[in-house]
Image (cartoon, rainbow, N blue to C red; front, side, top):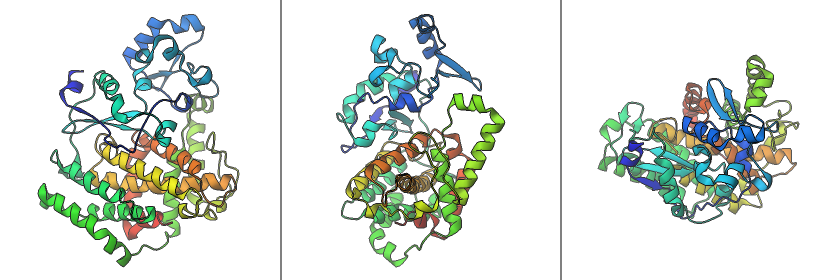
Length: 418
């Protein structure tokens, strides 16, 4: 607990992003909440099981979670999207994970950064007061997280960053992402190009002020460099890799479902669904509420890109705000993203953007639309960002292998083409 107070806390410094809970209850329907010992003691003191006559926690694979109803919603979700614990005892008496959402803590060598998750509908819509208005609450909650302490960040897999160096990269990348004079497709292409270029850099020779110069040179060269080296359409294997990556961001089994199926059936079902996504043939399998499936994969290819959407400007604003929030909020690399290096995290951000665009088209295809709407983009981004930093499969060696393959032959740029 003392470690959490020993380094300063910075709430995401992005004026374009706002947040206030609007009681939609989506997080209570969507998330499985793991409990700490302090949470369990608090629930016992509130005597919920005695009063409700049903278990309010459940154990799964050696860990304790809030119990869920048959529909997957939290046992404490009441009418109007209101948490029963919150309604009766107040915000500070809820499990810490519930209090904290949608804020996500990411310590580095200089401070703890509090970013936000775009799995929250209010964050997606940027509804509510400025993020700084939550600073006192976030600081109070961070003081209860024993695991927080200064964390190192790597520039690449072999080079540890000096405390200021990840910020130099983030500032340069943010300058490119927020440049509204350039279309979204160009900025996404530039993100992928930077990620691929930095993957081949020798950081032992480019440190401190020289790293700042390198990033300034690379970002400054993007407008001239990208047209000279256009990326063609993604070949079949790269498209299959994108669909497989999108599947693992969409897949989200509930504890109740896993128990009913059993481990063997659950693993086999996931394998078969993953294979169907990778092959991209036949019909899309059902992937949960809002992602019912049952239509042909071919229909996705017929859906136009963001540039054809009637909501193109709104989708541009949404994706730009998300990418900037991810980079500036500490969720693109380091402790906020599986401990990955800056270079690997930039590649993952490019892949997450590609998955978001593809899933938006998938959702539009399921509704029979010829282009994605901003609601399709929000639904897709919610699933992608929900998994980012917390789904073991996305932080795995298999994901690193996917990214390694996509670095070849401009793969990251190709899968981001409109």
